[in-house]
Image (cartoon, rainbow, N blue to C red; front, side, top):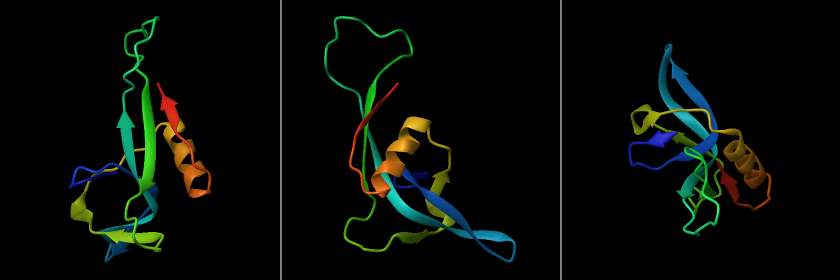
Length: 104
């Protein structure tokens, strides 16, 4: 999800519905996603459209023990399905394994 604040989050997400209208979203284990392009010079250049990037995550709200956080619907700009590498990284992170992935 992309928030109105510009943050990119990955999370299990559920719609909160009242009177057949979405009144919010419940984010479970939300993580802020950071994407960095490596600054290493490689002898072999990547194919066009094949840029590498480093993806890391940290808890969205670090000073809480809450794992389920409600968010009003007007704070969500868009919701998309993450690529498999990022989804796997998220699942490893919320299951207690710390890692960084390089995605194409």
